[in-house]
Image (cartoon, rainbow, N blue to C red; front, side, top):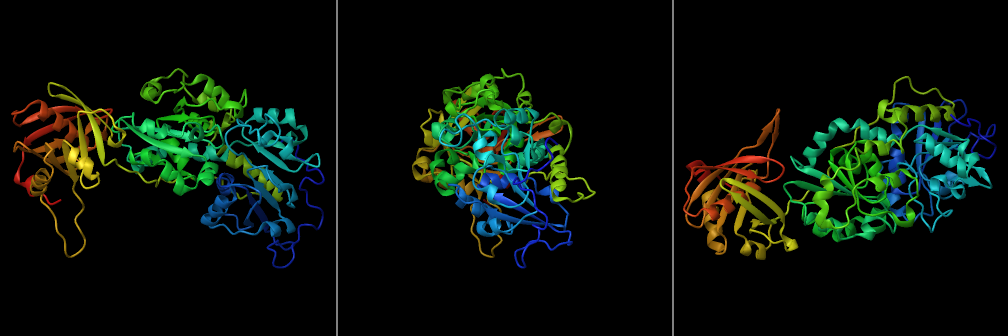
Length: 581
């Protein structure tokens, strides 16, 4: 550690100051218990604090309390996040009156210097990339700004935990006295992400990604963020990325969640969400999406550096404007990765790989041992924190908690504009959200989810079989009965189909043909990838329309996404005709 000594007034406890009055929660002399206060300024800062909790795991000597630091415009969301975590809370006035054995914060802003006890400032984001013109010193991020790091000209933090040696040098250039109390420990959030890398397939299953390429949009907060500068971009990308080849997701900074509110955010993003985009909740799931994804489209926010640590492809959409600090890790990323200026070029930008791999960018933000040593940050941070607590750490090693599987709402569009290219028995299908006025070969609409107008305009209407009802009274259609009824009710429809299982469908053509469609999964090296059978139905509908009078059996090669699958058409059997939907 650099600068282990704590200067007077820096949070050092005077002799006898550690005892608390009865009822205040302060440890009694000789009890061996230590009171740790987590000072929360925003929801984003809270999530950083929660990522370091494993350092105290299994230690009954630690008594943790959380307090909400006043003065932040994101305080309401922070309070809700603290309450949701189940943490024990004390009011700010009580926190200021009490003396604490350790105070942990992930943001230097506010009145932290008024809290009594050794204060530790934890990493907040990957690197120091942004400076806000309306806050602090011009051109400096808060984590390097003496305006936030000094009180009465002296550092208020007993320890400034940093993720990379270069950050100590940058801090020393602006505040030598604060840098003297800095230590490079790494980034606990990166620990969690790297520890979760082997859960990638589990996360993709939870998201329903399948064989598609998962593309994550990331938006920081502030006036230069993706959502502020290009609010229509999510919907524009959803309109141009074929649904069976790409899955789109959005990660929004917790501060932006707080500013807009979850209700309005979902309302504003409704066109993209209805097109199948996944919106990540602000805690933990954003990181699981990075583990699951194949590529990231980003602004100048530091989330992209975590994607770089996983060596994911990166495409930029904004330059950060005056907020981006020259020479910062994100400045290096944005200078070298492909830039997307027109949504129409998104597929080409995602295929471009001029950067030569992205993990090298992350090495500017995280210390090299972060990648080579498991749980590097948590173990080093625990050593530092227990030294300030004047306790020996538990004998067991600390492990980062893997990220939970995503639980975000994943919607399937109810109608698709379908492009089809037919070459003999080979059919290439691209499905795009129907509500975006896309030129197409036909409209495919799901019953009953599609609108009445979409159902009346659809060339293909399909329905997915529902699980059997557990209630004693029920009413169902057979596949044959429903397909006949839907053609009678929709005179413009040429094909009605029932999806009976992931691999079997019944198709009824208006010319009277009743066909069984069997969709084989794509298999290679032990992997089995299934395409949406409704996509294969569009291929069948297009091929049958181009070959009137052609009778089954026939086998088509259908490319509906990144893989080609075999689709066999045979005369329908009684089993498919009588299948109950």
